[in-house]
Structures are given as structure tokens and as C-alpha cells.
Image 1 (cartoon, one colour):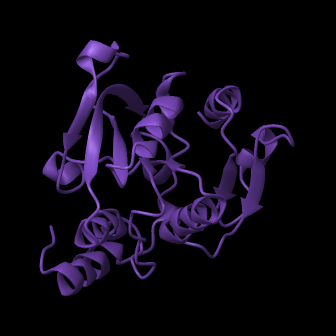
Image 2 (image 1 turned 30 degrees about the vertical axis):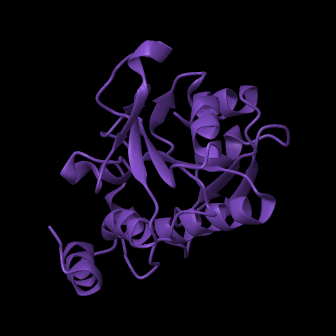
Image 3 (image 1 turned 135 degrees about the vertical axis):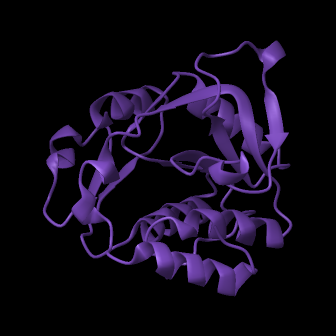
Length: 205
């Protein structure tokens, strides 16, 4: 789904970095053109290091940042609406609406404050936006899933507000990526991340 996503981001004027952390250069490189994105192959990086890279660039440039999986689809207006809302200064992190299948008019949109990730009915870390000057950073010691919760908890510990923008939908194709390429997931990640999350925040799954 990367090609369509890159075209949408290009049309929205989003400066995009595609970080490919597969163990060999993946097909992602074929969809990256000089006018739509920059490609980086970082096979030794975990997902949270790539997130932090984007947030670090955003903080340096004074820009809000989208953090997006390659297995999602957004509405054309979605990125601009996220940028507009974050620029008002109230929110540190905003997730796209994974419960709404269609774009909603302004009268049906709004931000719902949440306190965690999808397992708490909160932010979906497959597609979200941040103000990198207000949000935390993901602990890079997590291997796969625990860093999602860690980023939200860290942001909230700094006083940042986290929400989901109702009516700004994302379609997440959950049958792709990790489930299709199981060798991208570190062995033992479940117990490792569960214990690290508990040690940092006193809570886990």
C-alpha cells in the first residue's frame, strides 16, 4: 500500500522519509522517487528508532510529524487536518480514527482525549501525528509492541495531551507486514516488552 500512500503524501505537500528496516532492501525502494520521498535502509533499527528519527527531524525543523505504517490508507485531507489541529498547541499526539470508515464533515469531527493505545480504546500507533516539541520519545529498548504504550505514557508524563481525531479515518490492513513477514519480529519480544513496560510504568498487558 506504500505507492498510494506516497502519492497522497506528495499531493499533500508532506516531506516524507521512508525507513526500510527489512533485513534486505525491500520493494519499498521501487516506490520512492526524488520528488516524493527520501529512502533510508536501516536493517539494524527497530521501529521505535525510526519513529524517534522522524520526531527529531520535526523538532529541528519546527514541523509536526506523521508516523505512518506502510499498510494504511488515509483520506486526502487527513494529513492537513492533523497538522492544523496540532498547530493550535493543545495536543501532543493525535491518532487517526480507526473506528470510522469514511471521512466526516466538520460538524462530526473533533478530538477525543485518550489515555493509552488501541488496547485501551486509544491511539493507534500504525497512523498518528505528533507535535515533536510537546510529545515524548519512544524508549528504543522495546523490540516490537511495548514502545507504542511507552510513547503515550511518556508523553502524558510530560503533561502532553493525547487524542484520537474523530472522522479523520485510517484503513489499516492488518493482514500485511508483520503477520506476512514473521521474520521481522524478534523472537521473545512479547515477554521482553511486557516486562520492560511494567518496569517503566508499573503496567503491562
